[in-house]
Image 1 (cartoon, each protein chain N blue to C red):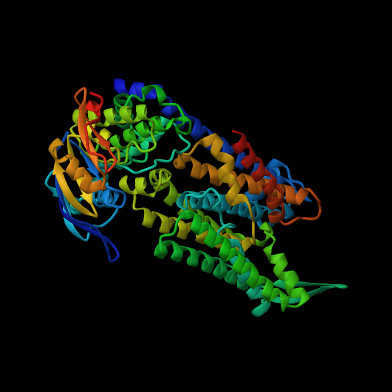
Image 2 (image 1 turned 180 degrees about the vertical axis):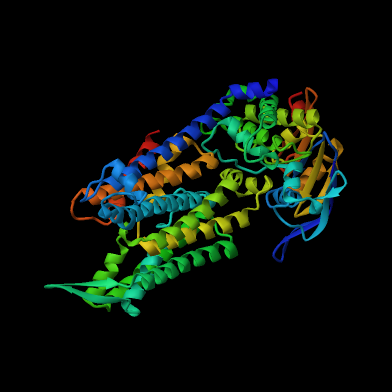
Length: 263
Length: 357
């Protein structure tokens, strides 16, 4: 479980985050939503220690991240940044680098067995000897997720994990993230831009506006009103075959449910 | 071995590690063979038994003992150490700055050293006129010009390190800073030369020719010490260098203290290149070329690429030295000219091959 407590952060004199406070339980996938510049990526960087918050703290299973050594933190939090660039190595080696916080100079059988398990979990067993330069965007993102899993983290931070992917790859990758979150009991926080992907795959939502937390909770916080407040956009919230959806609509038209528009 | 590890074995990881070790071993043998060849070749050719006798100072001919211990061995050692040091430095700079064009010459180190030497020769008068009939040659005092060259190189590096640590510049910006420093030092050198006498200009120019004959045992000893220190550091930090290839943020979240790694790594490499350039003059392209030449054989695992680059650099400089002594024998061409001549087309070839691939 991860608890973010009253987190503040500023770039110089410009405040970016103010009083962010929420929790994510193990096995839970939480989407962080908000407009560009609302502080979502900064929040992830504050959680994993890439940036130092000016106030507040982050607790993981009862221990503050400040009290963890660099190596302990690396064994606790896995982080997937935006735009993973491939390196000229095989998929196996790309995933193996995630074991760095656990490795000695030489790779032992336990490390190799762990990588094999992760490759199998992420559906990459057939790709092991392939160069990462030959992979598609979706496959590369899968490798990046496998790399973070190799850290054996209890918290996973994903910064726009399905950005620039085609719709099929987006669904595959999100499906994988949700399955792994549940299966491995990881607390996952994902910065998302696609509201429908977030609605479909997340357990809970954190809505941010101008560095502040506007709302946090389950499907009940994802109302047309809160979404309009966050994105300054009129939307309709509806369901199609049991899948929750959000559809933007022009501001001046009356807001109608598009699935019943023709009836 | 567990069943899962056996599966991992079948993925070929261990096979790749073995093949990388073999490449490193093959390079080691090749360096040894070429070093022997380098000791053999010269105006007074030596056989292999003569070389070993000479090294053991047990040769009946005192000339052989003298030739080996005072001329050929220090020269071969300088080629080996300088080649390995420059290549290792180039490779480390390329990873730390995440730029394949990073090398001592592209970061302004060489130009800084040349300016330092020019200061020593022109301003401090670290030279004397030596007359041979109708020709006059200016011989420089090696210790002063080497110290000044080191100062110039270190200054250039210090500026780049300061920019890197205080302004948190991108790797591209650091390379551009290097280019700016190189242009600045070249301009300073030209300005000094403009006001200098013909002999001083000739001496400055002569200094810039990378020449392995300038190094004695003391110089080689210092080079070896710095090389060992740098090699020990990079081998110990092999996984950190591997992590850094995936970007600054990934490396930090994998537990790497990237600012400290960058600072110590750059400091060591800069010390190594500055000392090499100060002792031997400018030897271009080895630092840039060697990592690119060996990467297709080794891959990007820095635990093997770094030592392989060093060995490849040693091999290249030994070969260049042999060429420099034989191509226009008995005239010995400065080895820096050979590395630049061979390096430029070879680098272009590598770039074009990569483009085609």
